[in-house]
Image: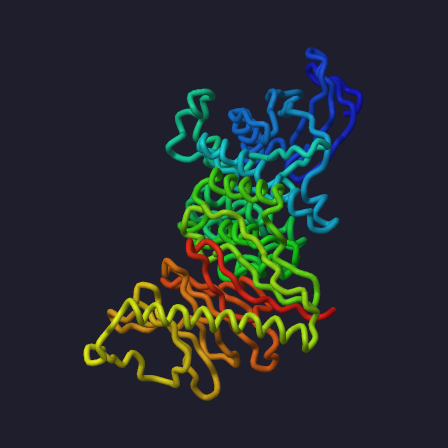
Length: 491
């Protein structure tokens, strides 16, 4: 087809080829501009479903007018073959950048902001993309980001008649799939998409979270050697904490990614604008120098302030995290002793101050104290009461194995949070709103390795947040950040 003139387009060169078409660079001889022409492959242009998807992409994208979405100029036909004339882009897709390693944090955040803004525009028109992945995201030479391939897009029922009063759309061209059918690229599917359930815009936000996770860590959030393994990870496993794979990830960005990748869409980001706002706020605070990396250099002990990743159900409104280096002592006996001694004295002083204040302000006669037996099974040796007094988080030990339990005091019901295992638990903590629990889990065979986990009070799989945690966490008064000691070994 090279050097041919089709309609009023002169074919200049082939740009790419894939399962859903061949793309050429061409000159629009009428308007004197360069465009991209996308043709269906020769062997599929007679396939009604493939043709329908192809045309659906054009109709859907043409209904959207946003700088983050590739512009469709026209739908044409030549010699019985349909093709799309679209905006010519110079650059490359994200899947070509990822093999080069994780992207710089500011660059990833900027990409995330642009993509969230583009999805916000599509969702407001009632369009769900359903296949957000690196191969469908184009980065231009000017660092602008464009979403490609609306071939799997779906129009929400309430938008069937029209798109914002602009372009009339036939619902049958947009609804080629139904509940019970999983469509999209497996590695970036949302849990509800993997289950073949009815989708809404929150599914795209999960997929976007998976893309951003991969950009900052260099690996997929839900890897697997087979489709079955990937599906299982999406449905049941939490991603590895981003900071474990990239120590430069700020705690606030980790919180944003965790929220975007929530398996329960009710506690995920509800709209793209909310995700965009969080990323924009983080970008602003990084630019102003208010945000530091989660990591520190080897051999340092840090007290870190991290955003409360335990707040995914709340609309994100916290300022970004900060990290305060309280000791630059290298890991030797004197340096470590001075740091830990100072921390210990501060904690003791604070404890006595609080105790003294409580004694001056509250007097409770001993004879009015009610003692109630809350547990009667196993050896309970560590407990924590929720802020509202309704839940008791406790550790049981039986036959040398520890398990974590949550008791609902008003009803007396007990729920096992973590099954018995050869680990030790410390640092039991509730979020200030009482919605989430935190605990530090230490491997019995390797006592120096401890990790911080989070789990919803109302049930859910515990999620690994941070590794190498050396203390319980303490929340800030507004509940949006928490502090903890993080020990780094000498390299």
